[in-house]
Image (tube, rainbow, N blue to C red):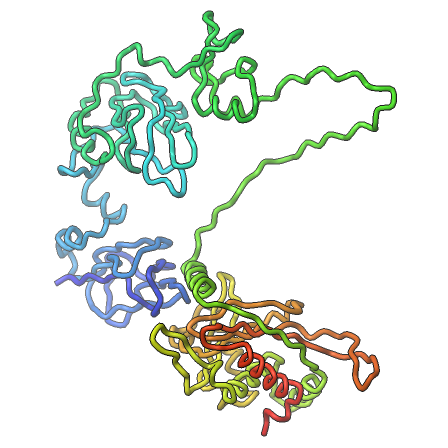
Length: 535
């Protein structure tokens, strides 16, 4: 019997996943333990293995596609087994490949499936903006029976942001209009049907019109010939026709009005000389007569003509970037942050690190020393090692420090369990190992969960001081800057010193200002006298 496999929840915060890569294809034999695919979660890209044996009968989510947890991912069963019932019962949309194998050239409507005649194209209400959910047909520039060529403007559609021209991507005859001028319909509702002249499309339009919830659920009446003329505006002195009328689209009129352009001076490139959006945007008015130059005129200002055009490139947000945005927004807007900064004398730390690293096969970074100092300071100030809940404040008896690591897609925070029990060299080796895993997207959910405090270090980038957003449910995060060589006062004398600034961000619900300050005093003592951390 075939088994349905859904998009798994591979982390505690995962709500949707992306199939980064399929390692098997439809028809392959699958054994228990085989890796089916690599799935990108909000935290890492992880291998997903099969717990079943059989043949891969169906792939529900193609490579690069995003789908919520529990969405149909694949079906495994016996070779040749009929899975149509599972596909329909699951409610998940079939992939394009599966749909093509099952039915060719059909359109799904509320009353069933209707065969589309050869050469006929069904056009639905397009999504013309990122937030558009429904659109209004402001005007039709074609009528039923008109010949349509690829690139012709079919209609002007009003979205939630603007009125935009919608062009045809097909050649043929406009056989049916599903949404009349002034009517509103949701995205994907039947807008029009284009195909060979004389083709009977009654079955298509009668079946698909039921999907237009905001439009009238009846067949549109034939469009009268008198209504075929596009919208026009009468302007004295105009050149549109013998009556002084200028033919222009509503969007062209709006742009011309905003820019103060006289439409009578614009030459239309649309059908029958109609002025469209591109004509107004590319219009350059004739130069006005230069004013008389006064005897003592100032030096002329050189005109500037920019080159190129404004443009954007859209890159889909990764699951990791979405998770970062969601988590940090929740932290910033729910936890009352405050910040405390202290400057540390790093002379002894620099000397101690040099001595430690002189030992063969030993490598300790300043960040390792900061992590160790934080762990020991947390032991003395348990109030900072807490978590806020609506009912109670949770005091963590263990100390697990998370270390922020930058990766190409964003930021991850691998965790060092029981950090206070680790030596400097153990911390250094563990941080290095976790950082490599993070950059290769090989961290497990367990390695990224359970932190009670976080350290974020931008010192290696030359940043002297910054603030971080608390990594909830932690109550605090330490931001570490770079070591700066600067004049300092010692024993009443100005000498060259090396200092480093650290900033503690605290959640005021759990950590009061005095508590945060005392924590920083203890941290300062450890880092300015590293030998005390070895005791």
